[in-house]
Image 1 (cartoon, rainbow, N blue to C red):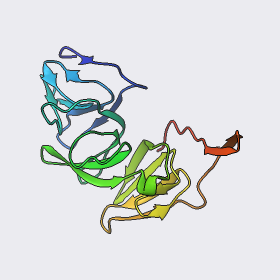
Image 2: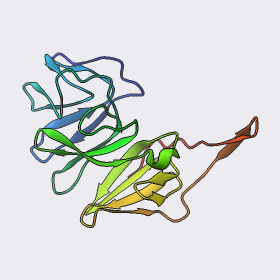
Image 3: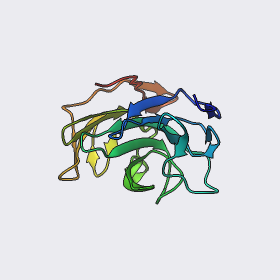
Length: 178
């Protein structure tokens, strides 16, 4: 469509429809049609447009995408702009720029990030490989209240641990959430 998406798709491309009925594409690509981008672009039926792109910025991989009922676009992944402090960021699109919501790597305790998201009302559900998110402990699954801007774990979450050479790893692979 429109020249396609160029770049390594690092685990695939995620799609969603925004409030204007444009197709939002997220992944590890660097070009959509003729538009330079950083893993996030929209298709309006005629042309691609970069979303939240900072010229000269590169290396972003968007792992998860969610369009909230109010039209806000939420993205998670290894992002390299808009207040980036390390891999594993959760951001919200505000106009044409990305606003940092939280770093997944709080207190340098995590080794993963968000891999999937789903929006329902004012709640943003996230899952992936993390043991902390925002300022709370959460075992790989959590919910963010978009109104109160507070995180909460979902129950006790889920954990699969592996011990190798006296080091314990937390390993979870979540593919979908709805």
